[in-house]
Image (tube, rainbow, N blue to C red; front, side, top):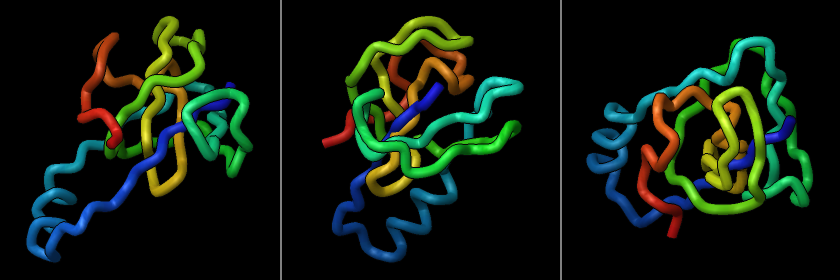
Length: 105
């Protein structure tokens, strides 16, 4: 199943960016899953690439979108894993049924 997540960069200084990246946490994609990365927070968005089994992803922000059922339940939360790239949170082991990052602005 595909999962989308997109991030937007703010006007952070290099020091702020370095600090943020040192605090960035990576989350495992569900075992045995090749996860679709989409251009927006929903299954109707274009697939940009497919993550391999065993992938780990950063979550820069999260946003509501299409509801998806996966190994970690049913959720409308989409994780932004890079600029303009989203994955369905139901396929990412965050340890939570809710938001684990700030909402995308």
